[in-house]
Amino acid sequence: MPCRRHMPLIAVALATSLVTASAKQAETDRIEAAAEVLEQILAAKDTGIPKAILDKAAALVVIPSTVKGAFIVGGQRGKGVISGRSGGRWSPPAFITLTGGSFGFQIGGQATDVVLVVMNERGLNNLTQNSFKIGGDASVAAGPVGREATAATDYKLQAEILSYSRSRGLFAGISLAGSTIRADRDANEKVYGVAYNTRQIIVDQKGGSPSDVSPWVRVLQKIS
Image (tube, rainbow, N blue to C red; front, side):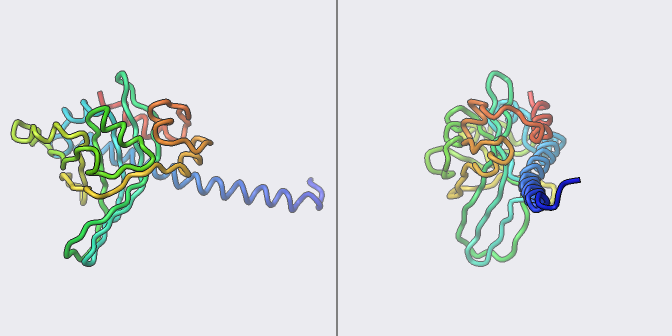
């Protein structure tokens, strides 16, 4: 039994441990939510993101339940993950945030899953910056859904990044022009132990593949 003079130190250590675990749990929940969205994308088949597009992806971004609300001025914010693919193998995820706004007469709000399919290395290089504004240096297009990936939409397939949304189970292309994606280094530190930037995790793979990210990695492995 610990002596009484050591009990305050033990209590502080226990409290610190609980706070750390709670903070990390938020990122674990983010991983699981992103994995669930990706699983549902793969199950959607002809009503979701075309398999031909997913098979060609250089990277995938999933931002589950992005909150979009508006009253005259629209805005959107969310937290998600990104993984890159090299040599047919997917990287562990890095954590990112999405913020942005749009003007228009809009009233109401809804929770929307946002998915970005990065089609080439240039798009991947843009997204691995610490801060990247969509529609700035990279070409971004609302992605085709289901069997719409035909000759009529071939021009979209030249875009570096294809953007999608899913609300109430339905997938659609979405415009995110003006939004900004940033590395969430605080979240990276909670999971990987070091405040890595996005490139260090998904290109250099310095953080390894901790067990916390395994739900996401398992679903990614289903994409050829």
